[in-house]
Image 1: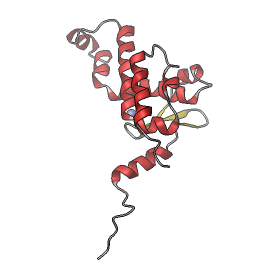
Image 2: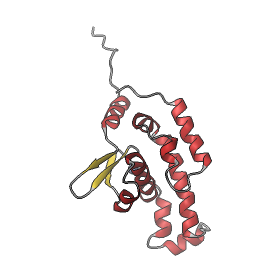
Image 3: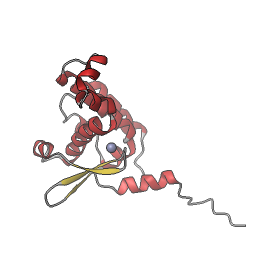
Image 4: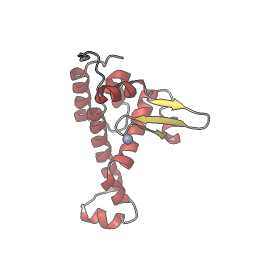
Length: 156
Ligand SMILES: [Zn+2]
């Protein structure tokens, strides 16, 4: 009988290994790709954000993630500002675009902090990086600090 209990690589572990080796940002000739650990895919980074965060790759990753989260992970946001936007905005008592965007961005930062905890710790994307983004609230920074306290550095 074979006993191979040791070193069993579960699917979850495999995913973590792949995630850990994925760089937050990869540059190409005319564009750059940003890695999203939530959907495990790359997406094309924003040219505008690149000019804002040209000296800080971690903040650039995070800023792209916040935008990506709003556009790809929150379907109701797209409903509100898409084709039938007026109807949805009225139905959900939407306020002004900028206020709503601020609120949604803050929620996105906290979701990213929770869902990408291991990835953030591994790449050192800590509360200092979060505080570089616009309007980051104390409440959000607390979530990030907690993530860094409760998640160990994953073994490479
Ligand atoms: Zn994603």
